[in-house]
Amino acid sequence: MAFIDYYKVMGIPKDTPQKDIRAAYRKRSKQFHPDLHPDDPKAKAKFQMLNEAYEVLNDPEKRAKYDQYGENWKQAEQFGGFGTDGGGGNPFEGFSFNMSGEGGMSDFFQQIFGSMGGGRRARSARRPAEPSEVEAHVSIDVWTAILGGELIVSSTYGKYKLKVAPGTQPGKKVRLKGKGGTKSDGTPKDLIIVFDVTIPANLTDQQKALIEQARRG
Image (tube, rainbow, N blue to C red; front, side, top):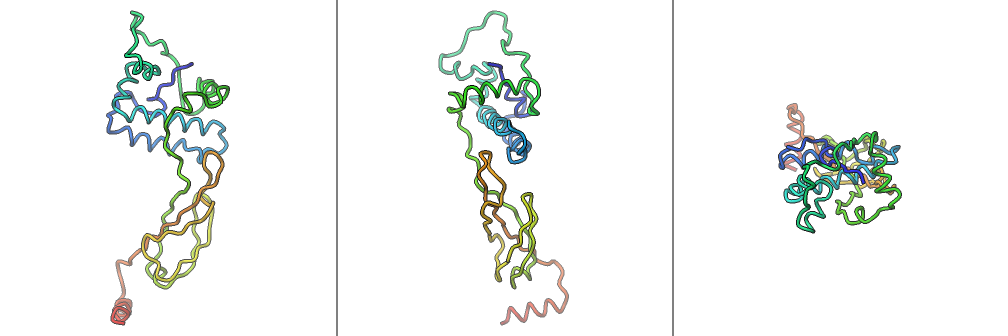
């Protein structure tokens, strides 16, 4: 099986500091999340490989073994290391992996996720669960928050008409079932609207007087 360079999957050089691995993963995951590439049949497999790379490189102990033994780091851990052939070379050197789908990647994923049908390696990998909802923050003015009203919310997934209940507090959430796009397996995600209330910085004397009157009851 062709060797996949986890550092290339993550888009980082091999000498990247350990503290920067998480940030690199977050940046990469935003680029290759399956929801952003609905027309790419390999999008889910790419994202799975990204998660696998992160799982290894984010763990200092696993990363050290991977740096020494490459793809065979798990076997090295089990059997206490491998002997060398005396040449000191990397038997997997020269395989190119890029996230755009060119070169050796299609053959690799055909082996792992195609003909093997989710084989041993795919089953044993521990990957974070895919979220079933997404959040979007919407700013409303204090008057709408107090008195209520209607507004149109535009998001990546479409436009929706929302009713704001009188007395809406900052951070209040509204769930829109099935309006947050789809998961990599095609099931819909919910869209969670979070209201942020904007407090006016400059008030007229009349507005201040009215608010003061309301405060006194």
